[in-house]
Structures are given as C-alpha cells and as structure tokens.
Image 1: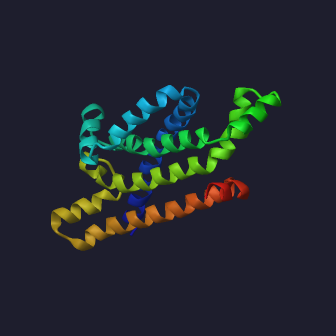
Image 2: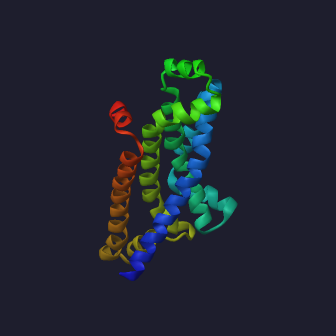
Image 3: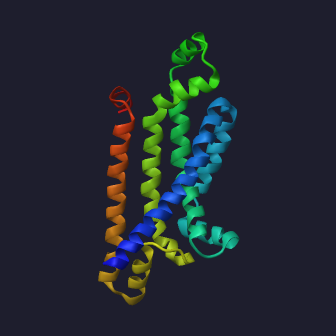
Length: 204
C-alpha cells in the first residue's frame, strides 16, 4: 500500500510538472497570438501536428535527445498538454467582445491593463478548462513513461503485463484512473472558486 501511494504521488508530480511547463509556454504564447493573429493559424497547425504523433513514438523521440528517465516523460507530457492550454487561451482571449476593449481604451487603459483587468478575467473559465483537459490527458499518458525509465503508476502496470498478473495491473491502473477523476473534480472546484459566478454562467 505504501509503495502504491508513493508511486501515485510520483505520478501526480510528473503529470503536474508537464502541465505546468506547458502552461508557462501556452498561456504567454496564446496572448501573443491574439496580438499577432496572422501567426495563429501556422502555430496552431504545428501544435496540432505534434499532437498526432503517437505517444510511444513521442517518448522515443524525446528519449533520443534527453535520455531515459523522468525528464523525458515531462518533456513528452509538455507537448501533449500544450495544445489544450494554448488553444483555450487563444480562444478565450479572442472571444472577448471588442466593445469591452474599446470601452476600456476609452477609459484610458493601457494594453497591459486591458489584458489583466478585462481579457484574462473574462477568458479565465476557458483557460482553466484547457488546464483540466491537459491534466487529465497527462495523467493517462504518464502511465507509459515506465517504458523510458520514468516512475509513476506505469511501473506496476508494466510488471503486471510482463507477468500476466491482472491484479498487479489493476494496482496501477485503478489508482491512475481515480487520480484522473479526482484531479478533474478538484480543478473544477478550483475553477468555481476562482471564477465569479456571472462569468461561469456566461461561459457554460
């Protein structure tokens, strides 16, 4: 039991690390694309193409550059988490009414003030939804990280496959599934706590 708990915590840490790195890239990039919309199509297409690469192939490619271990898994999770975060950031910001932006400019607000006080608060529900999708996706993909020497709940799953031991497989698969469900529920609660009720209703 203690080992499964340790593997679950490690699995959560690896998944979170990949999503956080994707957030550090995806949110600023989404903001940039809203300001330079001519680049949005090519950049989104490139990220879409990366998403089509099978996870095993992606792990192999990343391992070629970073070697075995957790760093390679985090890099692969970053790639798969980037699209929902980037797309939702761009969609949320681009969907802000031009009338609101014009009103803000009329009040003398700078571009940074418009972003911080108008665009980001309105787009926040959509951005957080992107993080939820990215996190659940990362938790699922992280289970195959054991194939490149990474930790997490993929270890008992892989050992169980090798030994044809269904119980051992389940000791990894069930916590991974529960972790994804619990994470989704918690992030949904966080969204409700951070986003004003009026904005939540508007974006449902």
